[in-house]
Image 1 (cartoon, one colour):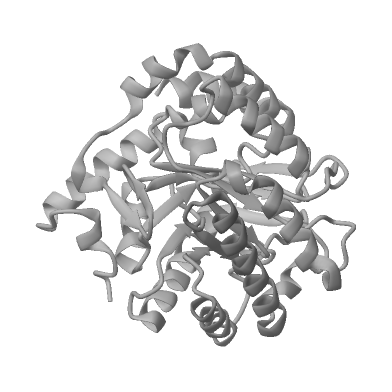
Image 2: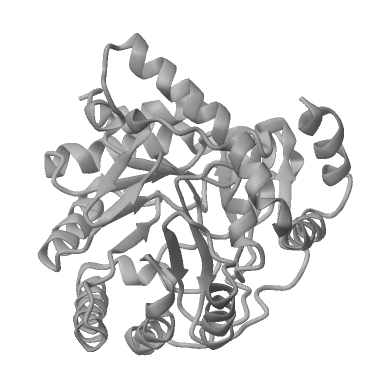
Length: 365
């Protein structure tokens, strides 16, 4: 309650992006509290454990890409009980993103609108930062994913080379990777969801994955693709076909929506950008259900969008998600959000007579 009654009102009294950056900077300075925070917020229960290919998550709640773009404070953030997390989106080239203001809170709707535009320090700088963190024990103990996007100045025809450049620079530092082809804030990025362009991209990344893994004498890194909610299910089916054909590890469903403005109450709802949070909860769950049913559960899904509590997470798991990620829900619910979700998931499993999260996946079908 302290967060909602005191801390959140203070944060929400400031510009959203400014308060976010200040919070990240503060967290980075509090890394010495990692052990204490981890003991407070982490729920250890084998019923929550999730396996996706070679990845094992101690619980199914992860942090979505976009929260810590430049790996400013990944270790201390992980202490809030996450089972896995992503940094980024990272692009091959450093870029400032779109003009400010570019991040808006919609408290009436429990939502955010962002048009940040992949502002980040670039793959070279972030790879160096992660290497330095690893050397001093500053990385999370949970699986760390790296979300990769396309550089804004790069045209669609050169997108494959751009993604490969970032992937190669970051390969050694991520436990898994998410290819972000669905942000509404980079011009023409979503063109890469078209079947032919998508196949070219994913095939090239998987080829590079095999090459880099062989050179390092290690296994290939799990690679996911993050898709948009703003498409017909027929196009989703084409994406599924490509993803399965190149043996990608799974789909992250979904990114923020560029539409649905008629569903929000806030006067800021007219701002362009990606809408995330409560307004997209049901839509994303439907997307997950469609992917799960189409693949009969063959393809792992990480569900993202409008998750604020255990019931939201459980709905997505029952629809077919193997795990979930939060961002907007974390902003609104605060540092105890993950703990409350995991405690609630245990209760829901007990209520339904299920022994594990794995037993709940797809049960809504």
